[in-house]
Image 1 (spheres, rainbow, N blue to C red):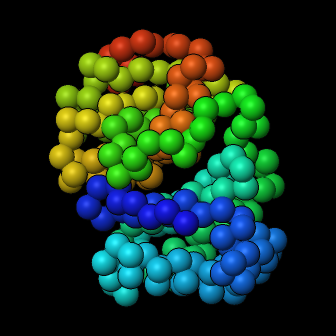
Image 2 (cartoon, one colour):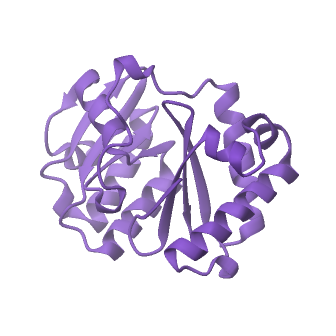
Image 3 (spheres, rainbow, N blue to C red):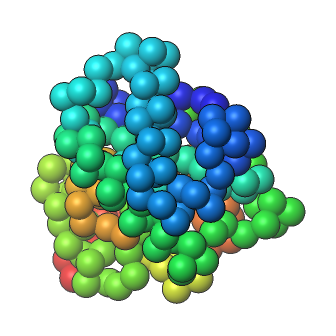
Length: 217
């Protein structure tokens, strides 16, 4: 189990199915039983509090769950209501299973667990239509025009991905950009391997200044 900070108010936990079992749970239980999901996440919150020195009693804003290769799950959570966060997580996991929302097999992709997760520089916003892309791009351009120059647009498996380099943003700027994506897009891609996979295998629609171009639509 690996915890890391993403910005000032966001924590990521990478946990394997084996580690879930060591905590006394199974993936099937977490996916099928909301009470088990709550018990499991409460344990994760408690461990995160000890390891990261963050007090979650004030609540959680959101929890995002993503399936990674090798029976691994990525949990990303930010500071609102703990009960609400657990409910959101349960619904996400069930929806992802129903939609078979998994990454390609490990033989076809880059190792998603490489890199220091506390120093993420690239972020990808996922949308399924140009209308939503334009709305996201306008919001980003209005608030963070400095990320436009190196922004790019990719298309893969029916989805569009806006790649943004966050290296020049402050921690507060990173957090705010994450919240924009969390509110307006289908999914945020953060892990280095996942971003690189989409860049290598996706169709390049716009190689640079993608945000300003999309904002004009």
